[in-house]
View (cartoon, rainbow, N blue to C red):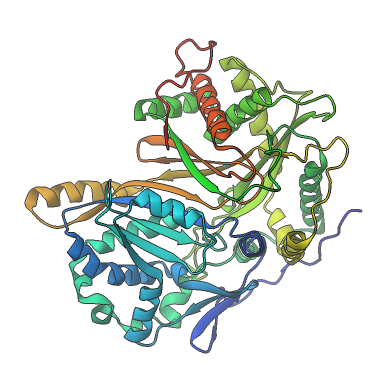
Length: 524
């Protein structure tokens, strides 16, 4: 039965644009739409979606200097990006405590800004990903056992997406600020923690931005959006290509992996140039490489009756509205994505191409299928209405006994899942590189980010391919749970995807020969 969306949907625009309201000494707001899904999944699915990032630091400062500055640097980062001060007292509410005293501010930094020594940045990164997070944490790694110094951010996905890059960037910059030698007590200023100063910079929901920035939807707009959502849900019942789950996954122990496969800078430049000239998006090209590798490596059995590829991906709100519009005091949309999917039929597309032309055709078909699903902004209204119901379904599923797969259903396969995080670099990053070099030549102290990557905790029975680039290097992360997928098998699949992508963008030597690992390298 078709669901009818509630009408009207927020036709009257609010006079007060900020969702955050003062309650005692806290600013609070309800979670809405997809935020509720993410929060429920984090809570009931053993930390699913928790985000972890790592950065290495280039600095002329000593460990002792960084140690003296690190908590004040973290507190100042909170003043710039108040989202890191948000916590979730319930599964339906977000809260930000306004610090009235230096003692309160110091207590928060002591609880959330940590130091690890005699270990490595990567080891801390993996340790954070392999445990369900409690409160947010920023961990500074000093006197490492090997490798460079750095920091690791562990944060909820509920109100956060790729903006974790600018948070880490700010923290590293603050480590280079000599004023932070004074500690939290020395820099605390209560006038910087007021409703007027903090509220406009706390994140608004995508639902709030939608009601403010889009024309009022018609009943037909809303019904079309609901139909699109129902089509997306129906795809989960269709047999699809996918990565087979380990046959003993029900008895295996959870072990989260975050692995990176990177391309050389010269290959990255060649890939971006080719895609620009061909008119293909990076996301569609990489998805085509994933589909071809998965469909070829794990062919369907006759009993499965697989007739297509169910592609799962998040859609960024900027495709539908201006999520960066903050001049009116509503705040930025820090979690602007909603779940989405597309279907590519094996009757209409070759899912196992081996040539460059075949891969490009598949990428074009995937691009059309994805664009058909993301054209309307009104699906945001659907998630706003159904968010509470979806969150309850996640809670119920976490306690329900597993059901046997239906006949002909490929329930024992993880669906192809891709998130495209974009480029982790900006004008400030480029300036910091230049400034740090100059500081070193002048004998002055400075800090800069020398490497960055993101990952997290994926407890779903799926391998999440997370595509991003840092400066001149394109790479993708494989986020998965060894409970469901064997380590060696998943890494081999990743190398096949990389090889096919290199072929698609024309940086494979012969164009039609066997997939070669070439200069693709795994950071194990």
